Each structure stands twice: as C-alpha cells, then as structure tokens.
Length: 151
Image (cartoon, rainbow, N blue to C red; front, side, top):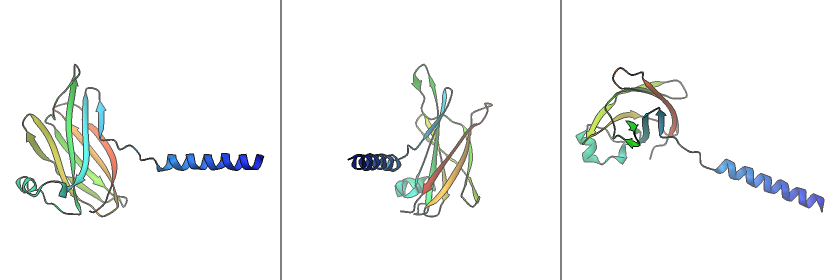
C-alpha cells in the first residue's frame, strides 16, 4: 500500500512540475523609471496595412519586423500620451552580429511614438538595447530579448 501511495505522490509531483514548465512566461512590454515609462513591442511588418506602410516608406515582408517604442509620463494619476524623445538602439543575435536601429518618428494627434524596421531570420533570438533620451535627462536604457518567426 505504501508503494502505491509513494508512486501516486511521485506521479502528482511530476504532473505539477510539468504543469509549471508548460506555463507561458510573461512577456514584459514596458519598463518604469520613476514617473516615466518606456513601452516597447515587436511585431511583423505585414501586420501594417500596405497603404500605411507605403505612406511611411516601410518595407513589408515575412522576414521583416518593427520595434515600436513609446515614452510616457504619469503625474497625479494621469498618464500622458506618447511624448517626443530621442530614441536609439540596436539588435544583436546569438552570433553577436548587430544591427543599428533607425527610428522613424510617428505623430498621431498629440501622441508620438517611434518605429524601427529590421530584418531577422526564422526562429532567431534577438537581444534589443534601446535608449530613450528626453531633453537633458539621463538616457533611459531598456534591454529585452525576443525570438522571431517568419510567417
């Protein structure tokens, strides 16, 4: 009887451990710096409709993606729309090959955000290093990794 209970306990432990392994990891898309927040996300260039891509001179393709950066400030419980800033960055793959990112400033009404197109290989893990600079303030550095897949 003890062996059956032991086997059952081991089975439940194994199932619990497997369930924890299979849980999706939370993907961060923002980093706070006091009152300021840098928001970031990466998406395929084909997610942008062709007329919009043409208007902003963005090349669409299955091996092309965009890094989107916006920068906000929260004061008295109110968060601003995207603020203007200087944004610089680069990507690096596992072989330490890097690409400098060239950001395009997009203004929509009172909101400002930045898009940087880049090329990637299927199943490529990229490390992103981005700095957001507002006026004379110290740069806000954001680093994160993403694995990208061609569609």
